[in-house]
Length: 92
Image (cartoon, rainbow, N blue to C red):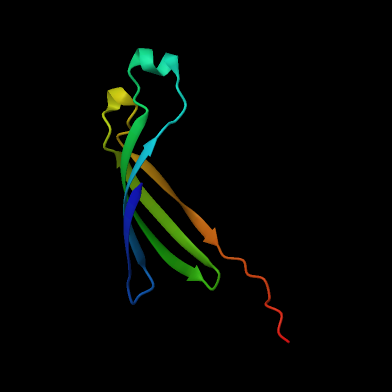
């Protein structure tokens, strides 16, 4: 399950916040021995801005709310460009 909130600003900037929870259905005895949890909860904040008609630059930062000892992460950063491709719609 996950919950997210997104807000678009007049400047074109889009801000997003998300809280996600995941659970591994696969059993792994090795991870159980070292105490890595099958569950994980993450908090993420992201910003995206259109750079031209069909592309947007984005950056996100997040962290795991799960303890480090259970397989959590203290910081996750990502960013890049997202491209939108469209196909012509046939008209009759």
